[in-house]
Amino acid sequence: MWHYTEKVQDLYRNPKNVGEVDNPDATGEVGSLACGDSMKLTLKIESGKIIEAKFLTFGCGSAVASASALTEMIIGKTVEEAKKITNKDIVNFLGGLPDEKMHCSVMGQEALEAAFNNYEGTEGQENNLTDPIICKCFGVHESKIREVIRENNLTSIDEVTNYCKAGGGCGLCDKEIVRLISEERELTPIRPRSLANLTKAQQIMLVDELMSKFIAVELRKDGGDIELVDIKDSKIYVKLRGACQGCRSSQVTLKNFVEFTLQEHIQDKIEIVEIID
Image (cartoon, rainbow, N blue to C red):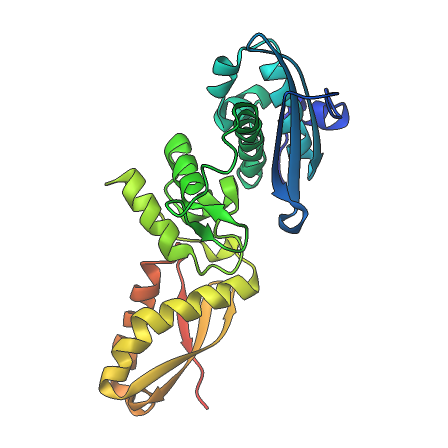
């Protein structure tokens, strides 16, 4: 059960500055209904100062609270002052958010950035050929992933997913996310993904990909192969094929090899269980 601060609960039940500013000087829209969250921020700006801010959002209580908090934080500030606001500032204003809801604060920051891009006439310039989409499921660009890693000291795929949803779909972008974490965090150890935070379908896709890339390719060199059958809690059920299937004397070594290899990429303590036909 997630814990919400009193501030989050209050702003969810009694949000401030809901709606749209009449004849806004700046409009920022982020997210989409397809991704489950969307936010629209409108601003009235006079002499470089934000005098009015309102929001509309389709999302959970954390999204409503984050957007409401953001409007309170920026009203009365100059554009340059408001540009310095990060998702961490929003979280601090709220007294904290559950890890799984951090993306709501990031969405607020993105809406503010989009509004300023609209105000300054620089919309669309940030997403070009030099800023590829890494997570196609949620349309998350490389620059956004790098930004949340740097600003929030993230060191695992699960944390990146919590902050910007990247990696929360099919899991095929995991390798790229790990690369970005490595580049941004340099020598900081990267914590691998936890199966407990994935759906059953995501678990199967991830383990199957890891087995294909790092295990099956080695077994095939000696005429063997391996097939993923099922995943239940921390147990991964597999079938051995070819030469591996008949070589009973080396099963302990092979089991250890599979477990050790997967352990490099999966946070949980896993156990390999062989299914024999």
